[in-house]
Length: 88
Image (cartoon, rainbow, N blue to C red):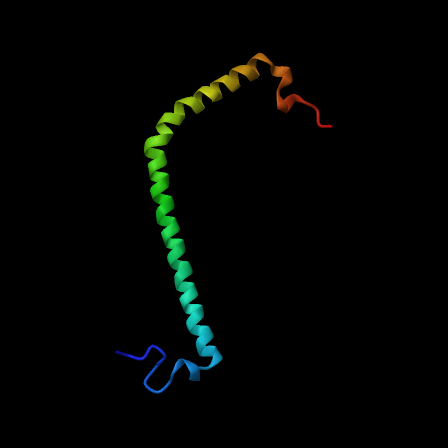
């Protein structure tokens, strides 16, 4: 079994330079961050697909009803709309 402290044939982790340690840790951190971003993107795509397939068809009629009610309310009270109020 290989010695875990051995970096190469002739160098151990205790003989490595600060740059070599920094570079290896930097690459490991970047790989971890990239993996996390890809995983989050995949989960977001799956959740969006589930939302658009199952939840949106149930919510869409409610939102359209709310929109129609808002249009009807604004047509009944044209003087009270937000657009017609003076800026103070």
